[in-house]
Image 1 (cartoon, rainbow, N blue to C red):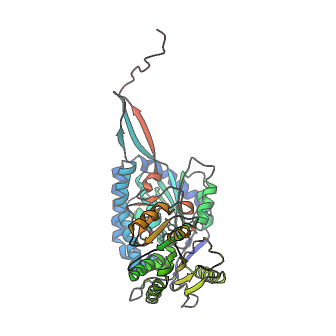
Image 2 (image 1 turned 90 degrees about the vertical axis):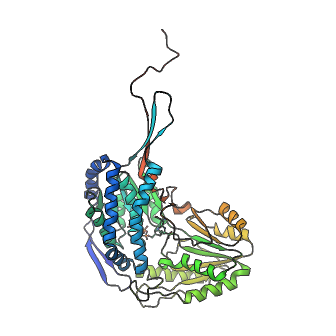
Length: 470
Ligand SMILES: NC(=O)c1ccc[n+]([C@@H]2O[C@H](COP(=O)([O-])OP(=O)(O)OC[C@H]3O[C@@H](n4cnc5c(N)ncnc54)[C@H](O)[C@@H]3O)[C@@H](O)[C@H]2O)c1
Ligand SMILES: O=CCC[C@H](NC(=O)CCC(=O)O)C(=O)O
């Protein structure tokens, strides 16, 4: 039980947006436990219908919801609208995934018997959400979890409690029982108490590698609990013999700076052959100069808004400086144009000659560039990370893409496409410090239920034919 006050501020103005009290972990878990059995016992068609009502409820609040997300995260309104669309679309995608991956079907069986494969829910699942997609990403766990028959205790990021609250309100307004989806407000301490609670059956997490690794340790001796970790990335973009460098530059900007670089799949490291370096930097700097950084509701709409808060902006500014003190050469300086407000303009820094290239996810609009002589060196550089979420090759050569695909260590491997903007209709996840081999999106169905195989016959029949005395 905490009860401590929680306040969220609009990054773009610094104004207070929302204020409320942190929740009571024991009470929320107990309510979910009490609500679970009835929900799990309902036929899946009932749960599908309830979730379709949820999609319609969100649709009916579309503009209000997008406005809130834009205010609370600082992302542009156009982008917040796409986040709400993704929340809505998640329902149909999850229904398809449920039946394809975890529904029920017959398996081959000996004569006079049957074998059935069915799936059961785990029970009460905790969901911990990040701030960058405060509705879409937790919803990407919650919808498949509910569909499979679990109850959920959801703790949104302490930086986006208002969006978390609105998401849960939509489930309840749609008639999903209050015992099935519980909202727990609070910060990391509430997260720790929830993830360590003895009465949860698993944890579905989206957030940083630092937190994910701590959770991995916490769950190490609890094999009975499911743990799905969706974490960050230090994602490479490799440019090699790309014929249209203007188009390539747009894909790089889209990868690195959409959502002010606050996407787990953002392109963080640009690796480029020496002969294309100069013309590519010219295209890139031209394009970056045209990027509008402004408030979420500004007209014209900006490409990107501020980062989430001033502490984060301070940390990113210091990180950029620290990269230069290690020998990085700024190509486009990261700037903070509006005093203490957390607006940042994109920064690009050449790290080729640096004494050290730290393998850290800088979660903001910073792109590090490395030049190489050979494609092999470029591949080695791309794989020089403990993370492994997304990677892109920009090249016209299909043979290079074959080599890239075979050698790169990542869960999303793209060709002449951005590192981000992944589809909900495909599996989504990474390796290394990016996840624990429980991919989300289409494959979220897999970690929301466990398979149960039944060998069945209508009546008992004698089966031992040999080895018995008369
Ligand atoms: N792979 C993905 O799908 C994906 C998607 C979005 C964001 N991310 C990653 O999320 C990060 C940004 O989000 P963030 O800063 O909110 O992440 P975070 O790890 O700081 O927080 C995520 C959630 O965990 C809680 N938490 C923090 N410390 C905890 C602890 N010790 N025990 C239990 N709970 C704790 C937070 O309160 C929050 O709800 C980035 O690293 C980004 O790459 C990953
Ligand atoms: O910040 C991390 C998510 C980024 C986003 N990925 C998805 O939305 C995956 C699809 C899903 O979970 O439904 C992206 O790649 O931009």
